[in-house]
Length: 170
Image (cartoon, rainbow, N blue to C red; front, side, top):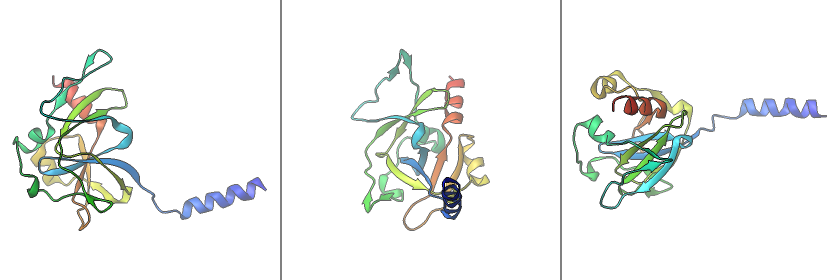
């Protein structure tokens, strides 16, 4: 009986569609970005100042990727397409997203919104177009989602490449 059951399970798993992966979405200046949930170490709401972050005796570098990518320090929140999750708009409240690479390196990213969980199918992610690659000149953003009525483009950050870039350019 187990052999038949195993065959049935295998056939059923082949019929399942891509269930997707959980990502954390957040806004930086003019665009929305995503990171896999597994690469998020901690999210810290920001009040008035950016804290100095130390984990296990090591200082965690904090970067303003929005400034790096868009070469500006401020943007109006109403100029960016909102992200709607479960019928509610993601709040524009600054946060610090602490990202962990596979080698356990930590980097803090300043965010202009609270993070929101997003389930994204692998089929929804496409390689980053050359126009973005040339404009941003970064290698840690690897892919993006195509925008729709329900969701703006979400740009995928590779946490390992990000940590490597930030930690090696100190």
